[in-house]
Image (cartoon, rainbow, N blue to C red; front, side, top):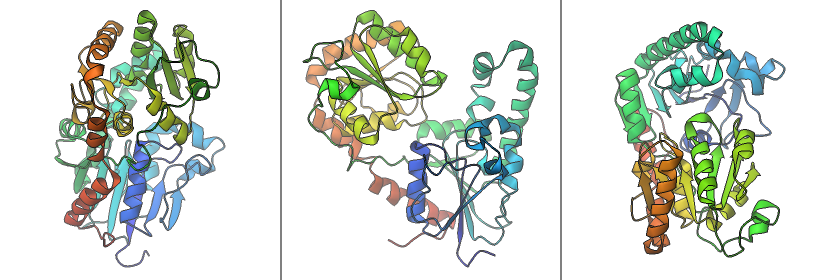
Length: 386
């Protein structure tokens, strides 16, 4: 039995440090001594948030290779989450980009779900996922499985007492998928760490002498190279325009991007946080060519005084100010990115880095904690005083 006024935190999985894990860290600050439940936990790559009392994982943790192969078990995720014993807790807060909301919450106990996005591959991106990841002969079976996942997710969403979304765009997707309203609380950006600074030596940035003049700044493409982020469009556009580009990060498509890149593109695999900051500070602009529900990268870049060239849909429209902190463009082809980069280069001399820094400040950790505290208290969750 958990002690009085205790809170259970549930996170989909802890195997990488991304935006969801930063939100989880902030929740742990507001809910000290909470117990954390998650499918799998790779403690070396992704330490648990400071302040949580203990971490409980699912049966998958004991399977050899479970921390890397767990996604193949998607159809049984709901069952795995339901196995967590949450009896005795006074509140449950789920931090969810998957099916963590399927946990069984005792009757009368508030269940707040910070939903980063309805499950993309079960809702609006299902057919895209099937075309790209599943052989044609297996697609009917996979389609049926994903339909069941979608239905199970909707049933779980109906039992959530309060939804929180990381952006208005995500709140609209929650409304479409679950027919539920969500309070918007923007994710925290470490504006004390991501700050303006002098550009780093180009060779130090990429580990070798770059294939562009020393006085020329490259564009930057940063993050996990997965299909929906459309890194391929930016790589193709820079190759056609012969613009210097650094692609930094990782992901399943990272190597294929390297094979398709032009001679003025350099790849940096899994840079440290300090290296990411140096990359932001040294970039001409960050290119953000995919639709994201929020997107930390544009805000981190602006916190460093760096402008952003972003697709004008999704979370970027809530963070990037067109003509002031960068440029928002339309279209989903490499030619559209080309035109956007040329338009940006005409606009760039009129952009003030201080405006970008000021814009990023509105997404600080302090702002996030203040707003999230208010939402949790209103939902009946016992929150740390402060």
